[in-house]
Length: 401
Image 1 (cartoon, rainbow, N blue to C red):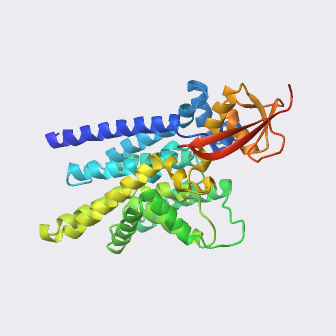
Image 2: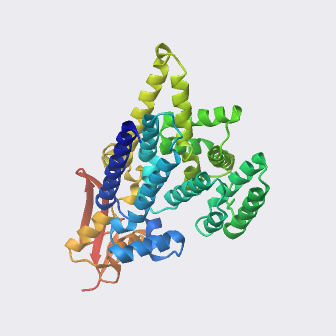
């Protein structure tokens, strides 16, 4: 192992540790449980629910315990990506840059902080690819296991079918199609509602997952690899997810957490394309690439900062509900204000807020009634402020002495 190799390994582990610390701080200090997350804790019985409940049973009912498993999935995903890219790049510096960008990708950061399946799908897909790379054969046990994890693995099965068809791997072709059919049978696919076009929305979401300029170059890289017949298994997975999400968006709104994880895993492939295109040119012809790289990194850093430090955006929004993470704010602060007033049992006009407050030990009861809408004979008004700006008014009425 060379000195340079050791140096970039050191940089990698320090960066990963620092980001995990930031994520833990963010989970504890800035986010409140959302309604969908509260459903996973108190109502649902999915894999997500089991993971969340297990963590809470071990570490207590708090925000860190709620989000810790997904931060751990994030760290393990980064480690797997680090292992997968070993000997993939010509220079260790390129590998470190690729992993660093993957670590701070807005979509990956967001997935690690929220209770949803996206970061789990990233981890298990990377695990499958790592096992395939290490053993030079497909892990059919993992493919069976994926059936019980999440419905979005149907996308992986379909991608593997296309890959096996191209490589004339009949065993993988048959099994991947069987798994795809089973996944469709178990989970189904919703096509409810009036057909509407959401293509622009889908591209906008992808732009926020990657950052706009990075996403544009990402599309170019996938297209270039397809034209030049440089289609690896990672390319098939990423391209299948991308194309399917675009096709479905012509009719309905797609859930990006189903498709995004598979698209993201091709990020090192994109960066290898960029570094190759950069280095085959003489230094005097690299200026355009330097400008593009600076713009992409600059935009990426801005997106990451907004992902992690987004409460100041309320200062420029006229309607707080338009904030992109509004549903993850206020509940914790409201529970603290209620506890200061010795209010631990409430009936709430907003049943979603009622369930969110339950996580912070504000239980359902008949001592107090609270509402986010004003009514004439309330006893007290609680105001939630961020940066001294009033964002939420809650009206409290004592109904039983």
